[in-house]
Length: 557
Image (cartoon, rainbow, N blue to C red; front, side, top):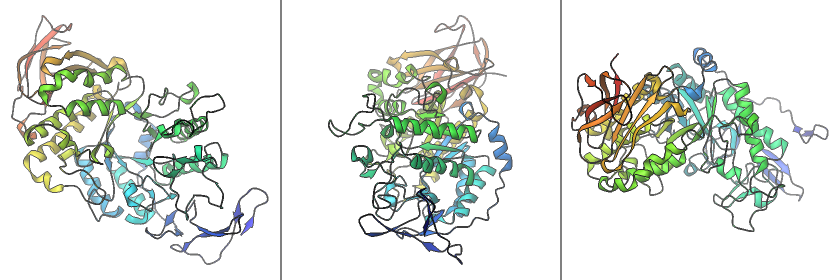
């Protein structure tokens, strides 16, 4: 190889190299040792556990022009977004990109989700990392096929009207000797000081965010997935670990920034750069932060000093709501403030409500197993919880299998319990998920004002004795959707529900309907709201709230 002046860039020309050829770089370190390294910019790799880079040529031509044009004219933050999170290797065992382009696309379209989110696709040597320890940032994993077959999967989803979000991992990378770690024998991609360059929890290395070449590498990688694979959004993993120098470190294991604070100013600047670049160059794309602290301005624009993300995972809502729903219904009255607290801060950021893979692993059990009671009660709890999630301000995300009541805790080594979807009670949950998505996408009140306080109004958030939440979602034209959730184990007959207008109303969703596996406690036909009102609203409906159930009401016409 020859050096291009003093740029630090080297090049070599090798005639006769064909697509599919495998290669590595061999570098002589300052210490006089030869090391073999995979190409950090490789577009393809051998199938793990093999580690060589592979020459890739793409002849793929996307057919998603209509999708891409529409996306560029859409505001993703005020549009419907219900996300189905997928681990490609375990959705159904043995499927590659080509097979997923048929089976997964048909299934997600039938369910009505607006987006899928793929856990990291970039190449990673250890399957048990789920993709979160990346070694080849520019190469879709070869486990499931050729990069063009991944393009075909994305293209197929777009043609079916489904967006694609990709988990992206710029926070850290593994120490594998053949990959990025100490690339030329010295810290190159990672920070040279282990107090900034090594992650104590994960045994990984942290990028040197203050180095221009490293930032360029990562920003280019983000744009690469958007441009080369038509990805619609990036969910950035482990943002909290990037923001703070003392993240998971004891006193003496970190040192302050130039201002004496704990913030990682270089990482903050990098996140602002990558977000600003994506939103400037790819209209309609979205970036999403997995950020678990109260760091201010995660979704504020960069020109206002924010990080510039479009959405932030609402980890507080997730923790509180799961804690509440795991309580026995007779005890929930004592925990009512836990389930209502999210509305105190619901509009401080643009939120997405995540029930992700992290909540169904490492001994936490499946969503179904978190629910108290017998099997009927567990499914009823889960139905009510999902209707509450879909009605709560913010976008939605659930992990694969939740939609039919996956029994077992998730493992990347096993497929989902698909046989459950053939059992009527579990099939009912699947049908409810489909109906939730249908109503969500077709009801502007549920999404167009997600980030505005005026899009939500409590009717009664303090009915702790009956374990009931009642509230209104509003659209821009003043059209309401009234939502009532009964988290108690019995029905509430003759429940007086304050509503914003007298006249004819109808129940548009009831999770206790028999078709969903419920007991059939529903409010059928036309319902008449009359004065005087209730809860400070001008009219009132008298309804029956089903046990462990949710009901949505809308004016007739």
